[in-house]
Length: 269
Length: 220
Image 1: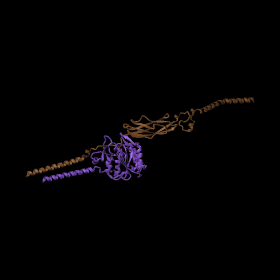
Image 2: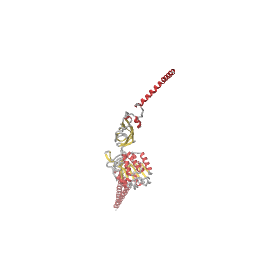
Image 3: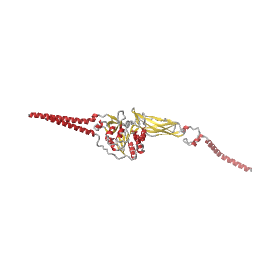
Image 4: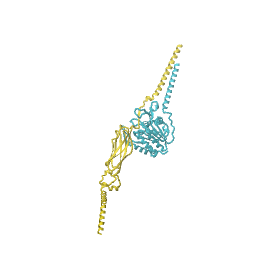
């Protein structure tokens, strides 16, 4: 009698512990995105410059020229230096409500077998974002040999994880191979962006800076249509129609997705 | 009357003798001036003059090479990555004279592994040529002064611009494998701790139960 009672108590205790364990695991698993990141919508006519590339290739003149262009058109700029380019920023990005988002960041996808992702300025570790890591929403990425690794956000992260929706924004991805295929572009469009501009192949820092300045001047100051501005900026780099890099052949130039957004213009604020 | 005539004659003769040297000098200078006016090499004509009127006065035997002149300009600083290429537009402009073929070339002061290619490599001013500079992945980083020479009509002109070779790494990174075991380690540790707790609970419970049973038997 006593034995059966004890066995029942023991079984209940173990069951309780297991339930508690599962609850704790679920809490940790779901709470891996930094809950402290605020996704309060910014004021209208905002432009974001997300600058992870300055980790390896700082370009102060690009930033000042870009800032001047944006202000001349009556817009205002939020500049995110590498330390602020976190996974949390990409999580909050759609809900922040910028009209134009310029992502000056390394990206993956130009090496065979690598999927497209945007590299953040947040150093990689194994104890953050376990769920996102194991479900391939976040990657571990490297921009230099024998240097720290960084988190990289995948198209799946943008689609499934990021908060809110873009208010018909224009996304300019300045990194390599942002349009070598369409998952990343589609991810931003599915979250409410109207247009996505990216390179078909690998690009060098000074090339993308030069082309992006020309592109933004055409868009903000001359109010050129997206398709024409992209074409003009693309011609500066003089890579067409294909070129070789590290023995692989890539399409050259900047692209626009979807093509139907080509008639869009940016009006003065 | 005769004396008066002789006196006048003597006076005129005397006057002639006095002015003769002066006349001689004036005539000599005059003759030299007229002669020199017909001599080409003593005329001073500005070699760079472009006045049609002046040119028509110039003797046709003057060589054309002395009048041909040109200038060269470029489109400015270029920057490229190691292993990349970039272009500069060279403009050759006729300044004077009849145009002649001008051939372009880079000097030998290019950075290691870099090469110059002109399209076209020669032409008659006015014309422009696209200079493409190619570099290798091993071309040293830094800024260099590129000198382009143009040679034609016995003249050599040059134009210079700055070339900056930057790191050739693209704006891209690589995906590294994730060590799933390391990522899941906190959860594995948590589960292990719970299992250990459960085992300990069972052990303690059973041990307590056994102790109580023995004590009960002893009391009996």
